[in-house]
Every structure is written in structure tokens, then in C-alpha cells.
Length: 172
Image: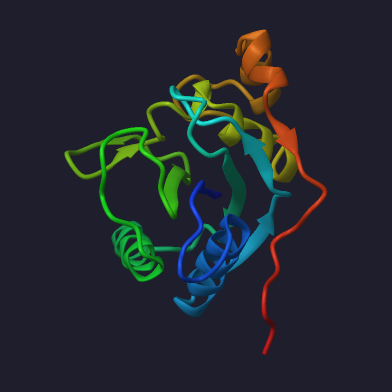
């Protein structure tokens, strides 16, 4: 399966952080990307500067029959449409869409590293994966999300909040 993670910690011309993520998912659907499951929203402090606005994230399970290059191009186009400007690492952002795992592919190029190189260290990636795909296993580490969550620091495990709120998708 293909796992994406979408995050936002800034409002935009489209609305709130929730809106930015929901619109991104709507644009993925319009790009003919078949979404199988979407996690609840998760909220975490900004890292490393916790004075910055909190992040919202969702995990998405996408149908595995996709072309990687097309998916990568679609994601970059969607980020631009929503208003993402490339900024310094860890700066606040309107939208961030990461390919966490692409059918277990291991790839290391200047444009894309798969699986995502820090996925196994990020609470906001692991908790949504555990929610929507509990059998998922990290392609390199061969460990599941629950095992990797248990390896996180206590601080990292308690500073994430699963919100009782789901993505709103417009149906035709």
C-alpha cells in the first residue's frame, strides 16, 4: 500500500489548517488518486520551536496501483495550488504532503527518499498509520507502527492528540 501524510500549521486563503488538509485530499481525489482510508486529525507541537503554531496531520492509505512519478508530480502541484512556498526546514507551512511508503519501495534519489527517512521517528506519522493500517511494516526496519511508537520517547508519545474530527470530503 501507499501511505501519505498531510500536515498543516498555518491558515491560508482557503481557510484553517483543517481546510488546507481537506482541500488537499479533495485535490488528490480529483487527480484520480483512489483513497482507501483517512485517519482522524492529530495535533502536535511544532518541532523544534514549540512557540510556532501547532501542526495538524492526517495519514492516508492510497490504492497501490499508482505510478510513483505521477503521484510525486501531483503532490507537488497540489502543494503549490494550496499555497505552499518552499521555506527553511521546520518553518511553519500551509501544507506538507509526504510520501511515507510507496508499496515498500526503497529509493534514495536527490528528489525523493523512500520510505520517508524520518517516518519511524515521527509520532504524527506513526499514530495515523497505526489507526488506518495496523499491519503496516516499515520497509527497511521490518517493524510495525506499534513497535516503532513504543520506541519513541515518553514526551513524543504524550504530546500528540488524536482529535475527534475527520476530514470533510465533498462527494459529487
